[in-house]
Figure 1 (cartoon, one colour):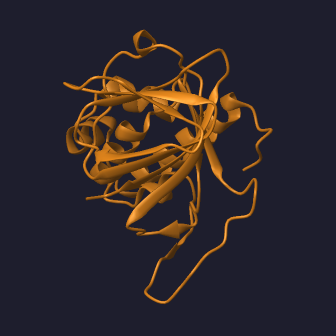
Figure 2 (cartoon, one colour; figure 1 turned 90 degrees about the horizontal axis):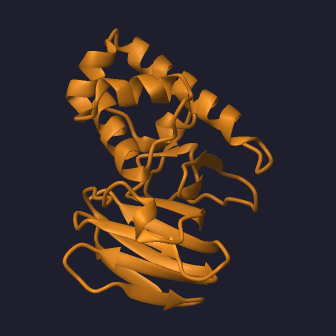
Length: 194
């Protein structure tokens, strides 16, 4: 997917893929909602390209559909196997843009990875820009590539990271990232499934 593709068409493509995965199993929206632990309206809006899902909701959805998260972005993929390797060239990613983040999902054609690497841009500059903390199974690593980022972890004091700084934590803890300063920050995030 191109960096230049507008967010609307990205959401529509994601929604089309989501609907395709649901229909392959002959499931209703209610079936997927129950399996994923998400609201029917959330899944319906995602299928219609009205909203883009955050990482935690994509993880829940993939789990509910019984697919690797990468399958939400690519119809075909190949499983990562011991001894194999893959290269992602600059600009090779699938983009998912929410009101607070631009996710650049790396290696969407490589399924069953033990880590989900993504680069991104933090559009949020204040914790108040978020409705709630993000939480999902696994562990998370973040490094600031450009700008500064304040990481908010539920029950802890916020931590401000400068370019080159990094953090590693349990993703089950409620967490949020926000750009610190006037400019959107660029980050690299790697999430493990467990």
